[in-house]
Structure formats: structure tokens, C-alpha cells
Length: 286
Image (cartoon, rainbow, N blue to C red; front, side):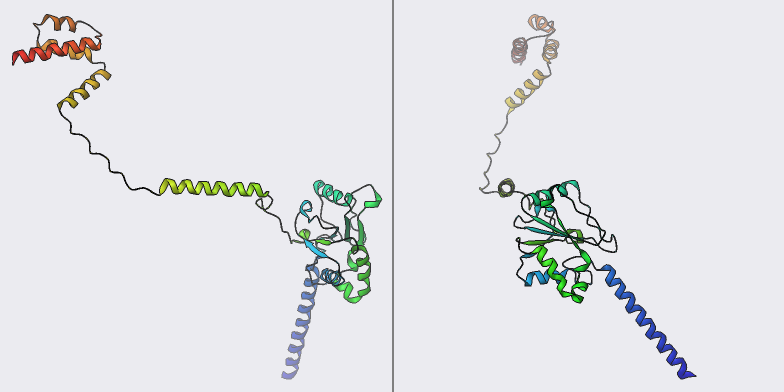
């Protein structure tokens, strides 16, 4: 009885392992994309390697369509992830379609892979420059491993026109260029010149290159400096009438001082005359 229970537990564990392996295989299949980097069942790595081995100049492109290497003569577009949109190409904006149309018009070729019944890529009304369509399921890693001769159809469609580039941005392998990378060389040189000039300006403003110059000590001040300072203060305050009035109160018997004190807005010469009289009277009294 005990042995029967152990065998049942062993059988259950084996069934569980088989179920997990099958689920993992399903996940690997569903997550495999139509990318030339992908080595899963839906990937195009095997086709990429076959083309390279047969002498085709094949590369991958991760930049926007407008920045594709000008040497590229054949652009390969594949469907997006099968689990998200089976058989569908990436949605192309009007600007992308215009760039691809110019690519065709200038002698380039576009070969796109979709599942039967998938999207059709129409970029021009001229049949002679229309993009070529192939069945995406016939050239995956799994399909070519089972039927290697199917690679011949893809080779005939892609080889013989020049360098081939697999477009990989749609599969998440973007290589978008920064703003700095698209600037022309003169602009970059101007930027570095400005940076060097700013650095020199900062160094010049903060680093002393000459010895400190000793300032001359201030001259000693006497009573004349005080008088000049007070005179300037009274002049700015327009206090001439007040000064003359003070002189007149000190010597009320002096007729000229009293006459000068009666002027409401005395001129500088009048204030100077009153001060001279006041100084002379003080001198006479002493």
C-alpha cells in the first residue's frame, strides 16, 4: 500500500513537470518575435545568417526611416509581435510613408513579411516601384529548420540589389540618435569654443595672476576737512537761510547780518558773506 502511494506521487510529479515544460514552450513560442536578433521559433536570425553566409551585405537598422544608411538598397520590414497583432506591420505615419516612398523612387527596394491576409504596404501608385510582399511564416527559424529550401525564395527577393537592412525599431531594438549626434560639425565646434571662452572667463574672474597692490594710506584730516564737509552738507540741505539766521541771533546789533537774515532764499555768495561777517565779529570779540 505504501509502495503504491509512492508510485502515485511519483507519477503526479512527472505529470506536473511535463505540464510545466509544455507551458514554458508555449510561453517561449508566444514571446518569440519576427526579429533578426531572435533565435526563437518565430525569429529571423537563421535567415539573417543564411544571407550573410551567402555573401549578401546584410545589416540591421535601429534608426528612424529618415536616418537609414544611404548605402542601403533593400529595406526589410517584418510584422510586429505575433501575440499582439498577428500578421500586422507597424503603423506607419504619413511622414514615414513619405520617406519610404522617396526611398523607392530613388531606386531602393522594400521587402515586407506579413502573414497571409495581413496588411498590404502601398506607398506608390506606380506598380514598378511597389514594395514586395512575402509570407512571414515561411522564413522563421522554425520554418527554415524544417524546410531549408524555403530560404531560396527569400534570397531571390533580397539579394542582388545591394546592401540589405532589417528594420528592427518595431521590435524594440531602437537606436535613436541624440540631438547632439545630428548637429553639424560647425555647430559642435562653435559650442566647444563657447565652452572654452566661458571657462577662461570664470578662471580670469576668480584666479589672481598679479601680486596684490598695496593702497596708499588715507591722508590725515584736520579741522578744514570738517568745515568743508559741513559746508557741503548744508549746501545739499539748502540750509543757507538757517545758517544766516543763527549768525544774526549771535550778533543782533549787526545791521548787515540782520539784513542778510531777512532774505528767504539766499544765494551761496550771500551765505558766504554772512559767514565771513560772523567770523570777523567773533575774532574782534576775542
